[in-house]
Amino acid sequence: MSAAYELAQVNIGRMRAPLDSPVMKDFMDGLAEVNAAADAHEGFVWRLADGEGEGATAFRFWGDEWLIVNMSVWEDPETFRAYVYGAVHRPYLQRRREWFEHLKEAITALWWVPAGERPTVQDAEKRLTMLREKGPTADAFTMKALFPKPEA
Image 1 (tube, one colour):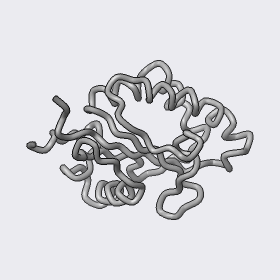
Image 2 (tube, rainbow, N blue to C red; image 1 turned 30 degrees about the vertical axis):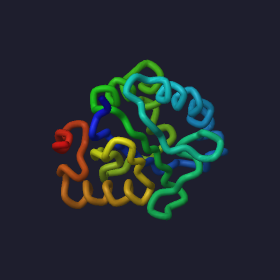
Image 3 (spheres, one colour; image 1 turned 90 degrees about the horizontal axis):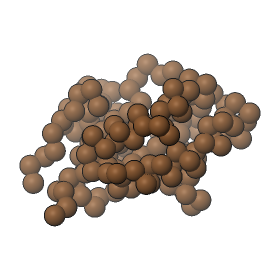
């Protein structure tokens, strides 16, 4: 039996330099490995990807050419957390300040979507805006302030 809801997530980053610059080289060189690890991870359902299979490279957020976006859907917060802090992704997470500016506003939002629904970049923009304006709610929340799945 499949779950009635799945966990959608968005995270954004303001690049310190263009994607093809030396500053971003290690990030870009590791993207395929990080995405492959997500794709193979228990609980992974879907991720936003451009025509070449690399998420975060072809999509801009809020019309800003320096903001890139990563979106994915997971079965639950536990499997998502295990991936984020797992052996492949964690080293890149620890180096994020080399590639991305520190933003004071929220850069990650989570929300529940009906199983099989795939969020759009516009959906993610709306959810992150809600989180920034209202704080964690059932409509947009964080790993530190999780909200339970809606009742089926």
